[in-house]
Length: 133
Image (cartoon, one colour):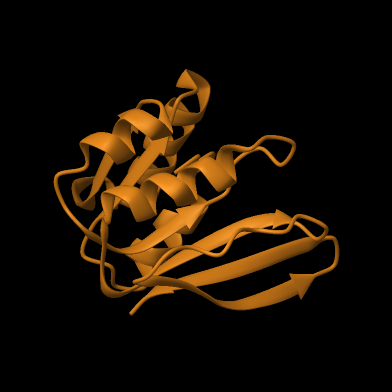
């Protein structure tokens, strides 16, 4: 979600992921993701959606192994995305959510079967990992 350039999903595809879904509401980001997928030869294993994160999460008809969340920092989009993922239970058993946020942002605990697993700090950025038991 909030795919931007698509670099995280493209990296996963290049390392063996069978497929990836890229979601961004901005048309310029979606165009760039499609260009990057074409340049890397990975477009046939990708779905690119021009959509709002909430509509995609609420309509998800499948479960995912890995979800990356990297929304604009000065918003509540990260917290709301986590709530919706937990509410609609779209992560597979043993799945992982990876969240990027500013160092000072405190991310919520989620209700079972989701749990905050670990936080990593990289300069001014924090990466928080959630897991589904």
